[in-house]
View 1 (cartoon, rainbow, N blue to C red):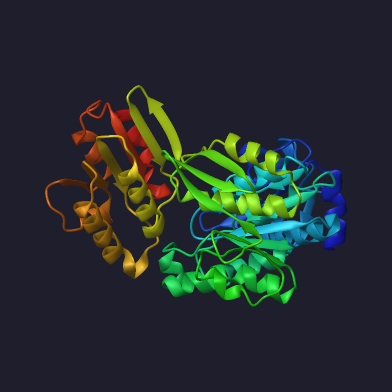
View 2: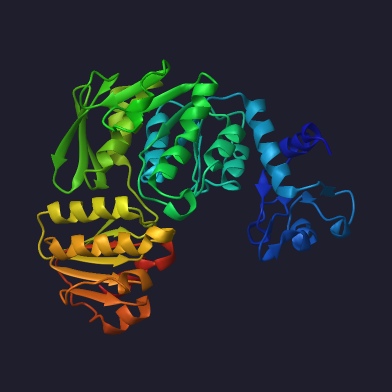
Length: 425
């Protein structure tokens, strides 16, 4: 079936489903494959549950006219998303970076939605499947699309950019994330910069943080809208100290967020800059940024009587860990406790990066430190830092309720599921 014909059927449907457990009535079911599953096997079940078409790539599972056979279901999904993006013809903002992508995306969406009907990536659906699902969630009512792009190896951002065809783009930062796939920090820089290379090649607009020396290398490009604390950016920003939370001053407005950590000031500034470019009123941007509350284990602040808990258990890499630890040390509350889990996808750098972080903790001012996971367990530390090979070892040793005041940081890679520690505090 031609992509134009598939798109006509898509427009008549109620959207796309890829999971038979979450079938939307009237949707098109795309039978994706993985290493351990083949959704072609569940295509008939999807129709029984309310899907109107099942897109499959194995003829033996076809049972009639509601089954649409294609060469490759994933490729069909991606091509349909690109076709739909061009059909809509709306401005698309592409977003990537090592840290802060999802928070920045949510802030941009909050600010732009004060004036426009926006559609942004849901959660962290930012890969080769998530990006097409995001594009296909947009419709004729959508005025601006915001597409988060994640990657753990080179050429992935380039591929996602060709699919989403962004008109604007922003990179949050270049940090020590997914070092295994990128082959080191230089690989991270080249991989993430594929977004800017796409924008340059297609004469699109880059939003640029002039306080980032790596990003400043793109200053020779003409279509730039910048922010920063010096060097005469388009949007001058002053970063403020406002207790434990990020705050900025811009265009005469002091904006105080509910985001823990001064490092989130850059994310706020980026969102302000992009909303300013699209002519959202400054007072409306201020409202949006101040009212945004983080969720989904990302820099969540949980208050329990005399105890403040910073739950940041969605992701971790050396750059974000260092920022979170620095922020904890700067907070006025005492005592300070850190419960930290292994950082994944570090490749050959894993041992050295975990050891460096352990030494940083050993020299720091945090009162109690618990490190959990195989990588952290293999580090050399003194007895002040308590090490556990598994979360189960930690939970068995930890005395429930022994931390009842001060501030606690809980941070680790998603696979560590450190939000479980909330049960013991």
